[in-house]
Amino acid sequence: MERIFTDLAAAGIVRDDLQLAWDFTVASEHNLSERLLHIRDDAFATLGDAVPVFTVTSVENNADEYIYRRIRGTYEVPLYLTGTGAAGSTFHATVRSPPSLRASCRAARRPMATTR
Image 1 (tube, rainbow, N blue to C red):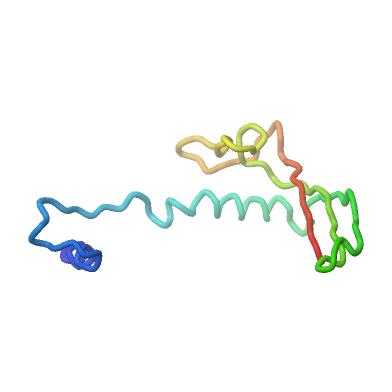
Image 2: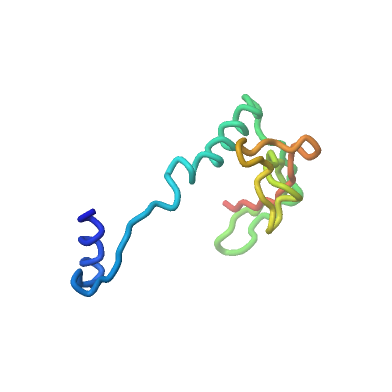
């Protein structure tokens, strides 16, 4: 309990000026990371020894004075989100189960660009 008063004092809040103070946790490290770690592990297991499918759509040499080569294309990644994965999408999961690959859309094509 004293830790909260130490933290408040460090923030410049005097203990005698307080009427009420409490400390609580909104989410644990496990709760915050569990879904993403599951997705990572599941995606790697799904890939096995393979690499994601990718397509090179253009190669531009000497793009400018700082870029020797620019490669553009797309790659396929497992889709664990609702919809297309665009803004507003949520995890394809239930309250009690981790995110799962969508049976109707097991991969999503995403743009890529790399420079050298």
